[in-house]
Length: 119
Image (cartoon, rainbow, N blue to C red; front, side, top):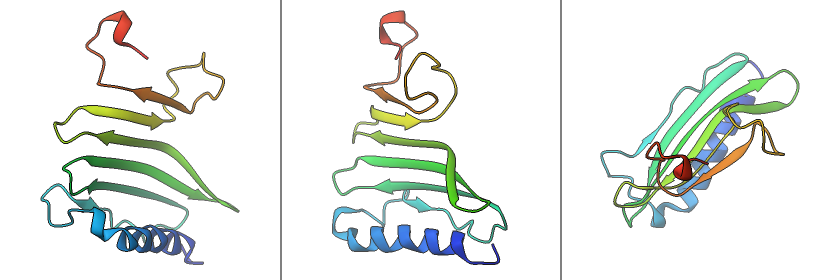
């Protein structure tokens, strides 16, 4: 983006992670941070942050700038060291019944397909 706001946003995230590097396993093969920072008006960001305890935070979002920077099409998923989901927060439009639609939280492991396991 010509005014550098996406790049600035990206570097703010990198700086925050740099401040917390004592909590992270940046050498883990799954650790990944997107480098898609040259977008003009829409940019994608993704990361897999691996913590020293083996848990992962998987992040994906799109940024749009037409005035303010707006985050949309996002998912934040925290996975325990055994690979089970602790939570996922996203804005997929599949729960119109929630008051914060489309923003919603999924807790616990991924559903097995049984009705009682669905969020």
